[in-house]
Length: 243
Image (cartoon, rainbow, N blue to C red; front, side, top):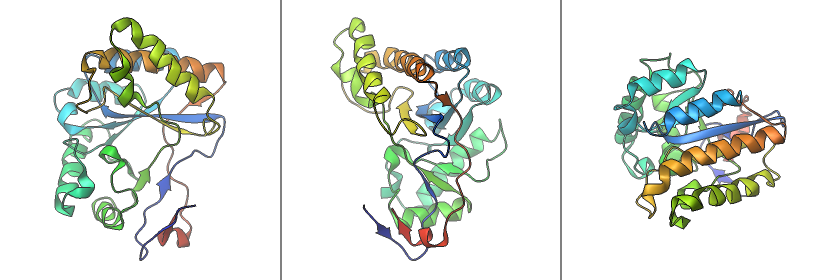
């Protein structure tokens, strides 16, 4: 087991849910206008809820989608403004990016307390300076990691045609369904991952197809997708030791 030490600055770190009959589908990099409406419709069809970590650079051009996501009962949190490694930036830049994005989201729902944070690339989740900075921005915040990942940032790179999207997505979903961490797991996926990998033309189809197959798989296993709950109370010693 890896342990990272600090002088009492670690924020709570969420990696699982307390109820093994549930999962949390978390979607980074949202919202994109050519995929987000289809994802919301799929979530409605399956009676599922999700948590979206939204990038300000995308959300600013899709204010109606932010509002619709909140209206349909999903949770939205800031994923920064530009999709950069904020753990490599100054504390002032980190706070500025998060606050700017949250100001946009706060037009559609109250700022959540406690605030759940996932920075781009999950950068800095074991960095005490980042945790200290986040606490200065939102005192009661918690850092959200994940267990099972869809690895969707790689799926489009393996597709040479639209016909390959569904089998490639199904392969990843089958792998996820066999993952022992799935019950009570926090699942990572993206709304068209922000990266410069090959296969960009297939990203929209991958995002929507993956969401459909994932929700089908969860339903077949009797697992309910819920929004991320508040973090459990943090034991005093966990402020010093992050496992």
